[in-house]
Length: 237
Ligand code: TMP
Ligand code: ASP
Image (cartoon, rainbow, N blue to C red; front, side, top):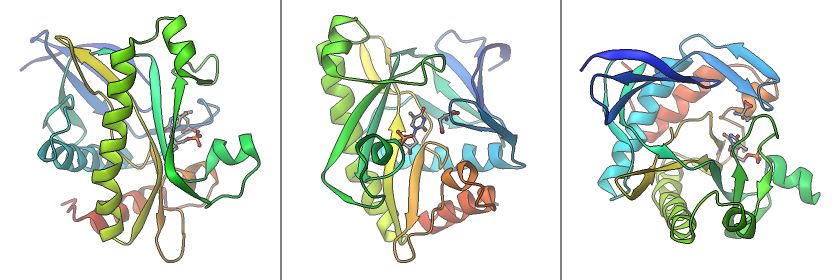
């Protein structure tokens, strides 16, 4: 497998073509961004930590029967993935209230959402990822009805897999964001699962362990990402 040109440079990852049209290389950089790119910093070792963290979670999801783009780890910062046609939507599941949900509806952080709730956002930095509903998605052609149903099904199934995994490590999975894509007519997860894209709190102290440490200048961001991994059973050496 030979790595070729950079196809896409996101805020924290880059994607490269390979000599195989069906596979891409995903590079986890140290760049860290929040608030639609308004806050940006390099956090040493974050790329490597997230690459390993993501591979660990992808393997757990694969064992549980979730279709994902993950193929294998290539090196410290790179992972081989299937080439998908991405849908322009972000799927968010929330088990506890935090972030934009609290701001939007004026509710207290930490309120238990029973049942867990689901939101679609349009993936657009220029527009600030606005929340959209299923009627918008259908009328504007962002995804087909079966794709909407499948994204919701897979996002909730992932919640049923990850929530107990985090609880076993003494942590609460508060919320997370996932993106999906298509390959040969099949819809699959085409995103990373790392502390950059979810909220994780200590179950007892409610200490924030995820990217909110970066957003809120709480310090020890990468150390905390590693700690989450270790508490899930991941070894970084
Ligand atoms: P929010 O509270 O800002 O709407 O975010 C909900 C969760 O989804 C939180 O864990 C962060 C994650 N998320 C991203 O990682 N990227 C995004 O672009 C958005 C909108 C949310
Ligand atoms: N990852 C997104 C950004 O850069 C949103 C966020 O995490 O706040 O801006």
